[in-house]
Amino acid sequence: MISALNIPDDISVLFLHSVPNAFKSTLLSTSRLLVYSPRNEHFGIVPLEAMLAGTPVLAANEGGPTETVISGQTGWLRDVSKVQDWTEVMRLALEDGAGEERLKEMGKWGRERVMTEFSKEKMAQCLETEIQSMSKAERPPVLTSSALLIGLGIGGGLLATSAWVLALVFN
Image (tube, rainbow, N blue to C red; front, side, top):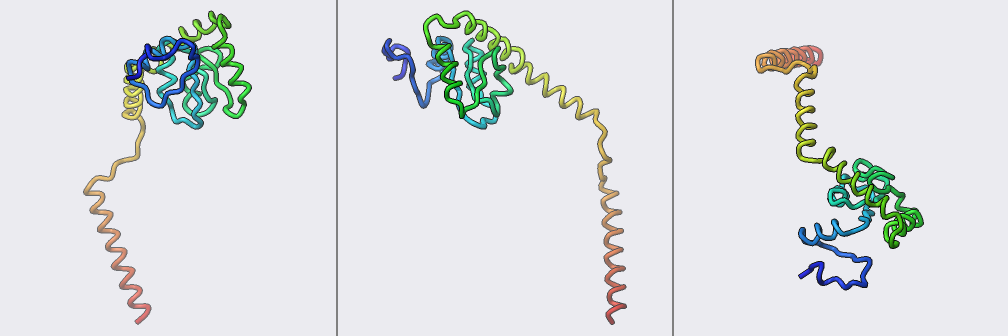
């Protein structure tokens, strides 16, 4: 069973494939930095979970993290091909006492950003706004069943006339 009690004190970096929710919450709330390296991630919920826990995020400067992480405020966005840039941020976050106040401030900003921009209430508000704007938008007239029947009748009449003309021409 994975738990925070099973991790030796001398482990400073831990790689896990699958993390139970309770353990994930413990890890996120006690971590100094979340490193999120997927390229071209469509959105990515993990950075939001870290920010909600008050943990700054180091993420790829492409895809979803560019919508959620504000570089320099809630974490850092870096080019995945520039390893030295990632190393620099990790060093800042992991060295004892280095930038401690900055990390706390970033954690505070991250949590606030998630609460104001990505909460269920905010998403419901955005959805409602979109639905309202769609209902007020100008739309082309909808084809009614009677208009469709008239159109089919005219189309059928044209087809019959064309067939009659072709029959006259080739006979």
